[in-house]
Image 1 (tube, rainbow, N blue to C red):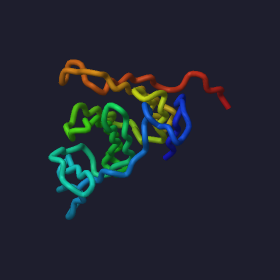
Image 2 (tube, helix red, strand yellow):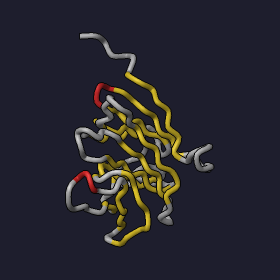
Image 3 (cartoon, helix red, strand yellow):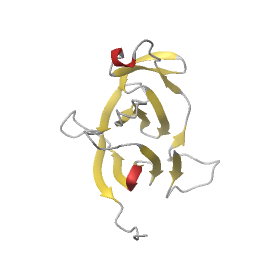
Length: 160
């Protein structure tokens, strides 16, 4: 997987107002047969439990933004290629969780391209794309804090 920071301004020493790749969080490890695992895993921050349960078993990426944290998880299984994007406040509250996945379709994440400190593009296998935007406010189920817009395949590719 590749992470690309696109459209960010400033040098590496001044990252204020931009996203930062971090390594602060980890997910609970499960034991026993895979079929018996719960569908959500406990999230830990700096080794301490947060009280948040996230979908998935593998934490793929974690970013800090001026607005909170963006975590990307999946089920680490070739038959469950569902990718989840979670937005968590700096007070460790789950503000939004968006999932991509449906039957007979692969949502294997290839890369994340940050467009600015509020927006990023998730690029999946086959060059399918989805744009995410962190909203300043939201209402559960009606207006999620993490806005998701499916863009489909990139149109400017030339056939080979």
